[in-house]
Amino acid sequence: MPENRVSLVRTPPEPSRQDIAVAVRRAVDLSGGLPAQIKAGASVLLKPNLVEVPRTRKSGAVTHPQLCRAVAEMVLERGAFVIIADSAGVGADTEAVIEYMGYGCLREAGFTVLDLKKSKVRRINVPGAIVMKHLRIFEPALEADAIINLPVLKTHDQVELTLGLKNLKGLLDDSSKMQMHRRGVVTGVVETAAFFRPCLTVVDGIYCQEGVGPVYGDPVEMDLVIAGRDMVAVDTVAGLIAGYDPLEVPITREAAAR
Image 1 (cartoon, rainbow, N blue to C red):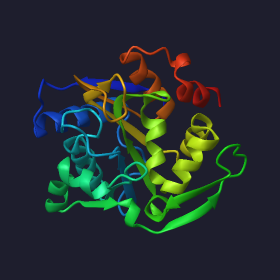
Image 2 (cartoon, one colour):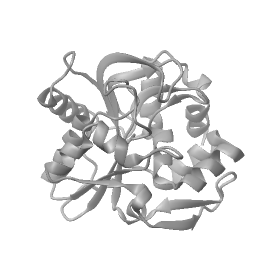
Image 3 (tube, rainbow, N blue to C red):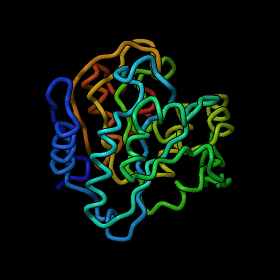
Image 4 (cartoon, rainbow, N blue to C red):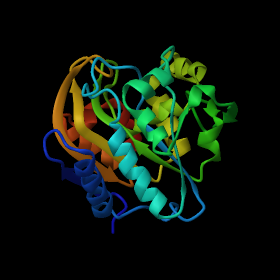
């Protein structure tokens, strides 16, 4: 099966936890299934988008916790260990996002949900980088055997769209995030994504966002789950669904050219 296959599966409107679980499983299976890295004994980090406390739980700013749970349950079936982890945007409180969006319920169900801002950081050199010659990365992201990327489909007021590629910025501490925006966010995001190389991307297209994203745009219910192993291909397809020519999305364009 081609590594750049991208699957799209619809959920019913206002989907239940079970609806989301069924759609996620089908989307992952259609895209080729869980990659070989997801195996017994492996440590797998799930990276949702927990950027900031949004206006409402259905604002399309933050990854749906039940989508995250569905992926986590699939990983556990392989005998792997699961860590759900992210850091909110610069100056934002990750724990507040976790509690408001219902990720606290995942903790109560026994899942490990980490606020990466409470984790140790390592400074890592990135050979060949132009913008981000070194990254300050939270240790859990470096210690994981595999990363599964769980972005939400939404617009961004600086770079048109924020999807899988940009979502990985949450694995960096605030100083690296700020440095990236000062020096060149597009190239910085692409360099960061190339460093992490998640093995699977599952996009939350259930509640999306248009307008002035990534936090305070207008919510749009699309009832979609998008999945694939090739992050650039996934971002390309998700962008097309949102009405964007991938050549007009700077991050997607630069990543595809590499």
